[in-house]
Image 1 (cartoon, rainbow, N blue to C red):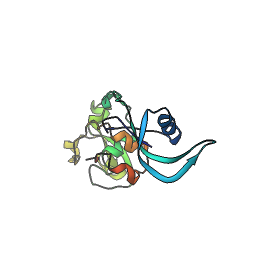
Image 2: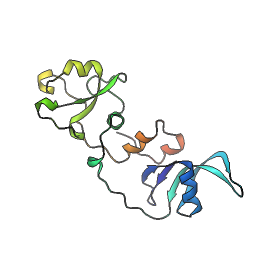
Image 3: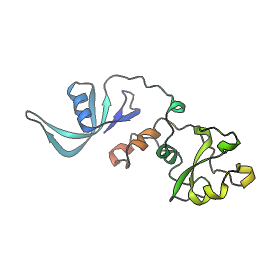
Image 4: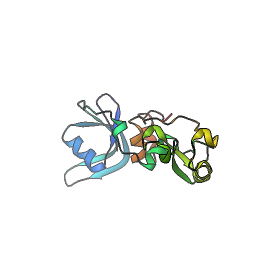
Length: 164
């Protein structure tokens, strides 16, 4: 279930069970629901897809401190090699190699297909004459919603900004 802040800003993904608890405690309201009905001993609920918190929750915006994972890098780079545009056989590449003093940070890691990664090897972009299509950057907070759910349901799309 997609969880929106009181300001309609996407902040998290939760389980159906957690969503129902938030609804029962009146901490959230349903914005989108499915046709499936969930039954308990005394009640029945439409399965929520998108809920909105009733009160604002302050969310720290420290994406630069979030753990760098392969999935997060791939999602940020739209699941494309940043050197040739391929969508298969993806790996991560340090733009400035670690052996040349490049850090393991959001600003130095891009998605790369295995052939491009091997071709670039232990060289800088200038030495290899291979420059990323887009400069690596810290991802927006919404990227972690795209990472937490393998597929984005149609009901969520109206509430999520595009990745670009």
